[in-house]
Amino acid sequence: MTWGACVVESLQAADTLSKAGIEVEVIDLASIKPIDMETILKSLQKTGRLLVVHEASRSCGVGAEIITRTSEQAMCMLKAPPKRVTGLDTVMPYYKNEDYFLIQEADIVQAARELVEGWK
Image: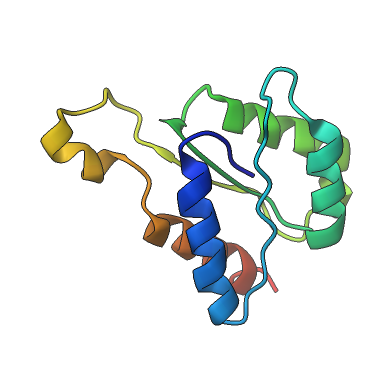
């Protein structure tokens, strides 16, 4: 589950994971207000897992809201606890240091592997 600037990294991560035999479904939420819970729940029904990727801070963001709503509406569908790959809970650094702040493909791949391999 992703949107905005993280879509490209998420698709690249999905390709990397596919080459390793891990198939994922990337959903680009075109709208986060309202949150498209119908699409999220359909995906969850197929996969049983939820990884939310967004560049905003971890705390108090849309990702936390998606996980909360999913837990409230579809806890029984979850095969593993939901995970998030997010920006850091800090201000955005100057451009020379932004790679340390922004989400990278490797961050998404690692989280997806943990979600799948850690909870079989």
